[in-house]
Figure 1 (cartoon, helix red, strand yellow):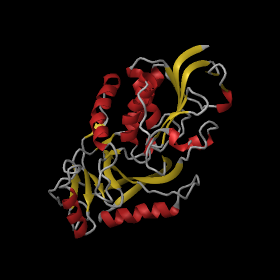
Figure 2 (cartoon, one colour):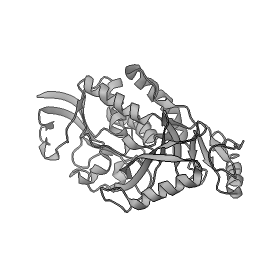
Figure 3 (cartoon, helix red, strand yellow):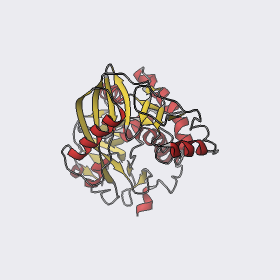
Length: 343
């Protein structure tokens, strides 16, 4: 039987970022990936420190921004690539009152470094009230990030491409099939609702659709946001999305969500465009908008890392280190993220 320090179940942002912590600290592990396309893999990957509806920031935003550069420089040491793209989010204002609110908030101590108080005018999209730029924002090259990290994990014998079977866990001798483990980390997103060890934890699926499009006229090199995000992927292809739907749990494209995206794009972009593809997946969200980390009530070496929501890059990278320090250095988890808040 092969002995490992960790088994990770799930290879979205949570699983891959936690795997990085183990690589960095030279821990032995296996990560299970069922090859289903996750919400992480089709996400926008936007790293935005500002809540764009209210022009405010969120809990531990500065800490997450500071750690983002650190972790991606570490990942670059073994993939030879940095996946952060230095493009700023630009928020198109719906009316003059939003500009006034942006200006007012930009003077607050916790927001002055994020909200640029010089408004800009874009030529490629409709923005009669101009737009505000978010400093210290960026985005992840999502496709290359997952392709390269999963390839690295496979080439170094960490990755197991198969569905994890809960029935094959032996809780008495801490083994799974041919693997003996010290710790078992579930990073499954919405699949956690079917996990017999953590199914009572209130993970809420939030269905999101996004488009891959070709635009006749190339927009300025920003992450443009009005109703949804618009930015260049590569060559002439662009990302536009995503929607949020807490009620549709079907495994089909939602017509209303598709029409929402198409109408939103037509309102923003007055030139010709071609829709190449539409994708959807289910984000793992939590009512209190905090990620979920921590130990199972009964099985003391079973853990959960979940609930990253729409900020998967920020939450996944930063809290992977928090979870590792909790496991390996016994650093207490903040009560706001500890899974014990649901027990």
